Amino acid sequence: MIPDQKLIVAINERRSVRRFHQEPVARTVVERILAAATRAPSAHNRQPWRFAILDDETSKQSLAKAMGERLRADRAADGDEMSAIDTDVSRSYSRITGAPVVIVVCADARVMDHYPDRRRSEAEYLMAVQSTAMAVQNLLLAAQSEGLGASIMCAPLFCPDTVAEVLDVPREWKAQMLVMIGTAASGGSGRPRLAPDQVAIWVSGDGAAPTAPGDQT
Image (tube, rainbow, N blue to C red):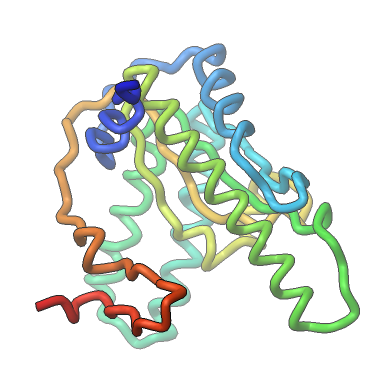
């Protein structure tokens, strides 16, 4: 049987799109994309992903402004040049406000198992993060299937409390990333990828030592 190649084509053709036309995205389309995201696997089937959808100018501007202020303060504390800080803050603001839809993706670890020790507690939190990331990949591919462009920003990881405060969501919703969605104004550019034999090893049970990535001759 010849496998269906549509999914492989979609994966290979996906690009990070950062420039969008300003036409709105119908909420029914966003709902279909979110439904696809929620079909991702998750640890213990706890489905820790949470989404806050911003599709109006006021909410996007409020989030962009608050994140920009936090970015400015952090970089100023690092001693960076003000001109470089201004450029970084302006770029971040434009990316957030320039997208018709911004989906703030969060992980809520309250639904995960809880342990008295730090080692297992940290593992459970990472499970929530991994599960949420898998939902985002579904989301990105679903957006592409709807004929839309999308890209992510992981900047909320540096200011989850700021994001929660602006959005007025529980502080336990730890922001992981933003997903910007809209009709693409550019095709996005392909970025180089390492080949499988550069990042993977075959582990054999016959006692032969595995060949580390990059060691092939």
